[in-house]
Image (tube, rainbow, N blue to C red; front, top):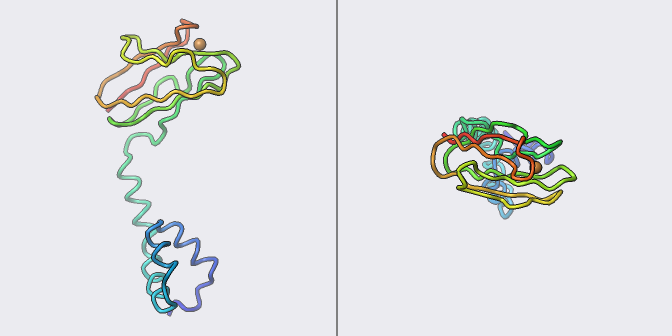
Length: 140
Ligand SMILES: [Cu+2]
């Protein structure tokens, strides 16, 4: 039986299995908790597999602006993804589409800018303040 499972391990398993199972365990009697533990034992692998299959494209949707460059210089995301730029430089920068389809205006040091890409394509962008700063977002 699963009565010997330690509270700590049970918590970890529940956390990995997801919020729904954790919530289910919160108000349950000890009898229900044992059943939940049994289900949770098999759940983490399935949950991890599901997460991986939902994001075949690189999981990252963040671009860092640092040392007068966009990192990564080319990021690939799925259509519908919101990409967020964070200015980690001391200077201000812009995130400006070459075709003008989006423009952050000046993002101050420490600031962020987000843009959602609904349509597949390759979006070249640059910094209006520093023309040598160029990068692309590839939307699949
Ligand atoms: Cu710049």
